[in-house]
Structures are given as structure tokens and as C-alpha cells.
Length: 99
Image (cartoon, rainbow, N blue to C red; front, top):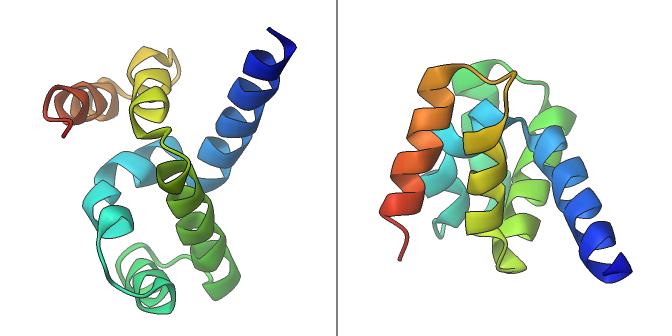
């Protein structure tokens, strides 16, 4: 079970660097085919994140998705107590609509 704990800790760390709200709000952007630099530029324009922060968010979000941890990340967000209810509900909706 040590591996499971390490995996969860890594997922949580990456998810925090993306931001729970950002991960849910821009899930389709992160899942899409848009090149990473274009996705980062989009975040810069829409959310006014700095360029390095946007690149980090895109990189970590895509790392979560590429590792097959999409649903686990959405579960963490949906169960997080310090996350606004609207964000938790959006995560639950995304889970229900999971491919």
C-alpha cells in the first residue's frame, strides 16, 4: 500500500499546482488536442495567470490525465471540504459524464 499512498500524494500535489477549480473548469481544454503552449496562452488570457504559472498548470493537468488519474482527481475535488460547492458539483458532473 505504500505505492498507493505515494501515488495519491503525487496526484494531490499535481492537482494543487493546477488548482482544483482550474482543473474542473478547463478539463476539456486539458483533454483537448490544443498544443500545450496554446492552452497555456489561453489560460493567461482568460484567467490572467502568469506565463510560467499557466505552463505549470497545463503540464500538471495533462500529466494527471495521461497517467489515467482523471476520475481519481475529480473524486478528490468532489470530496474536498474547502472547495466551493459549485466546483465540487462540477467535478461530480464530470465524473458522471466520464467516458
